[in-house]
Length: 322
Image 1 (cartoon, rainbow, N blue to C red):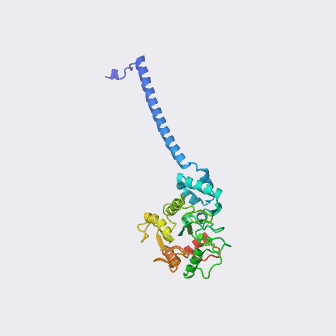
Image 2: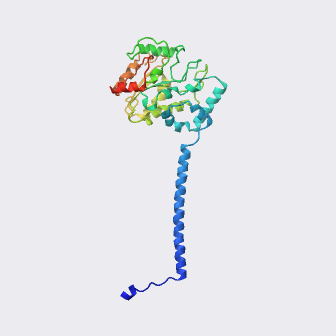
Image 3: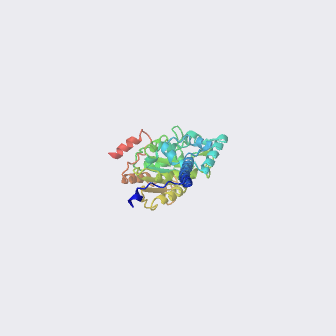
């Protein structure tokens, strides 16, 4: 036993050595091919993910979106603007601008989003389409720039505000509502462009889906500490537009219980045709007072609904902390 243990090992024949080498080569080949397949699979997945993320937008979309300068909104809406339907909308708007007078001018198309960062939105007012008179529409629903005659709907809004204790003490001399936006009021039209003198001329072209996505982003893309939301919905179109989206992101439209506290106030439209009509007339609704009361209950600063005087988000934030 001891002798056999220490006996010299039997040498392999040339044929056996050759077979062993072939076996080892096959193992190496399998391992190499396997790793190559894994690496190839990884590269394919990464390539698909990369192409999905960096899929180039059409020139028309790039041109249309070039005036959306707010980075948080741009990121939140990236998936939607990559859709073929949005490319069709962008092509339509470009063609309209080339052949017709379209309001607002390109630089003002996304004023509502540029003025109010996603996480700063506190109150949402939903309009229909921009004013279609010369110099009126500038990207904020119901607002006109200084020097432009106050439209009838906005005059009724001011009349209602004078009956609310919300910072407006006399009838304003202008209709420029940028000060509201700087406090977190998103004044959003359902359709963001219109042909001169032709109300609803850009309806059904794709803007409605885009602005639906904006409202959805208020629930899906805001940070957890962004606070609650108050909706002021004036008229049936605004109510129908927002209700279905709000319902999907809350436990009930009436109660407004959700991860994003929500309160909704509906009334008729402030235009002279509807301001005093329906079972929930705009005039006398006290919607601005109710909106501020809701904000306070959400531990948020109320809106100063006056239209004159400077205000910035930082000032509003500090007043909320004090």
